[in-house]
Image (tube, rainbow, N blue to C red; front, side, top):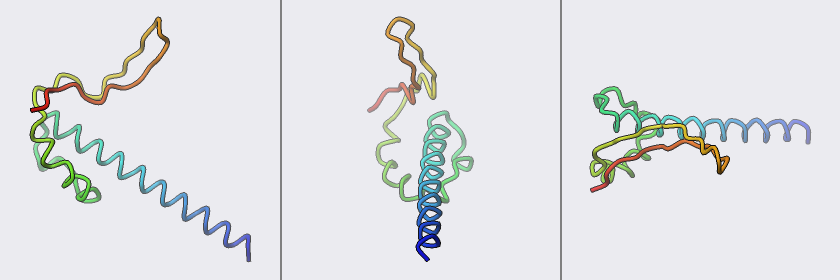
Length: 90
């Protein structure tokens, strides 16, 4: 019985984290689509409506977007990363 419970627990955790990561990816994509000027009908909000509502008052103040999802590497400091957004706020 313990093996069955462990399998259920691990499967449940996997489904939980997979769902969480999925919603994070959808939220990130929705923000990127919105800031890149995609029509509102192209921004899919069905799974992330609550997250989007929390951002709705702020995202309208983001203007003059210069960079979205840009990979950066610093050759002498030896770091790399992704710049999510460079824009003007308010």
